[in-house]
Image (cartoon, rainbow over the protein chains, first blue to last red):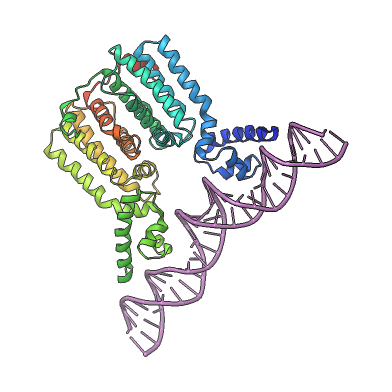
Amino acid sequence: MRADAKKNRDHLLAVAGSAVAERGADVSLRDIARRAEVGLATLLRHFPTREALLDALLRTSFDELTARAGAFEESEPPADALVTWVRECVAWTTEYRGVTVLMAAAIEDPESALHASCVTLRAAGARLLTRAQDAGAARRDLDGDDLFALIAMLAWLGDQPALAPRAPRLFDVVAGALLTGAETAPAAVREGRRD
Amino acid sequence: MRADAKKNRDHLLAVAGSAVAERGADVSLRDIARRAEVGLATLLRHFPTREALLDALLRTSFDELTARAGAFEESEPPADALVTWVRECVAWTTEYRGVTVLMAAAIEDPESALHASCVTLRAAGARLLTRAQDAGAARRDLDGDDLFALIAMLAWLGDQPALAPRAPRLFDVVAGALLTGAETAPAAVREGRRD
DNA sequence: AGTTCAAGTGGACCACTGATCCGAATATAT
DNA sequence: ATATATTCGGATCAGTGGTCCACTTGAACT
């Protein structure tokens, strides 16, 4: 890569970082280009889609999260490891408003630039989950996909300004349900189940 | 209202109904106008914002849901009434993709045309919740706002194509947690709580 | 140092979005 | 039949993501 190109790329990433942090993941790409004093075409060549830009931007955070999962796996009791990691995932997304819905779309779209990161994250969560299940600390009727959806759901809650105040409480409710191992739902729930 | 205006309005509502049903709540308004063989300006005068259009479109569904809540309150045991109603709310939103995020924004924005409907819905849920709590069937550390957020969260899950398959299972998990009355969360959850 | 040419750039453009304006068309009341 | 208040919709605007291509520029090789 030519030196000027690299300079532009790095500068764009830095500018995009603050833009996303303060405006959310759906900032206008033109805005980012303007702030970086660069043409829109330049931004789009370095990062052909919004997903590609976000992937480059969030990759280190992703790696940190999966690394944390590995660390917890060795240092924490199964239940704590799982719950704390989920909490960190949810907390992390609050720094980047709007990224949750993109990740939810990317997990099943191999074309998305965010796909790989999402899959890795899901795998890290799945390991923590099965570990907790093997220890008898988590209910066994959930798998990695369920955990991913659960995290996404709680993260989305924190993304909505009107609902965010309720997010911590609902986190506790959901995390508690994840752990109690109450695989037999109360009658009222079982009754109307349609699976 | 003039006769031709009413005819246009009704026609627009009908067209918008099918358009939203098949394309989701973020259809292009121009598309709706085109399908109705009407100028965009006409659509926008009848319904000045997308929210206004959706409100007119969903009002009857809203009313039905609140009526159902009232009916359940008198005919069903508290726990069943609550869970079944929540299930119906979540199921309803799957018919109108994308409406959940608009409702989440509207519940705290008195300017939104959807505000009133959301508030009514929340009140209906709150009644069912306190009834279940008084019967000792639901945990007492949640209120109407929490329930609204909980419903929105599950509804959003069903809106995401990649996560929707996990929605029924997570519904059971969350609904179970709502009922068990396990207000004392497991140690692993309590530990990291930051409230 | 000068030449060459691939790599990088960004202004102009496209189709699209929601929104607004205003002259033309029209339904209703007289 | 006329008058008028209402309704209509094409033209237009600023915004979006995205593509194209004439131009500039970095760096490698003589």
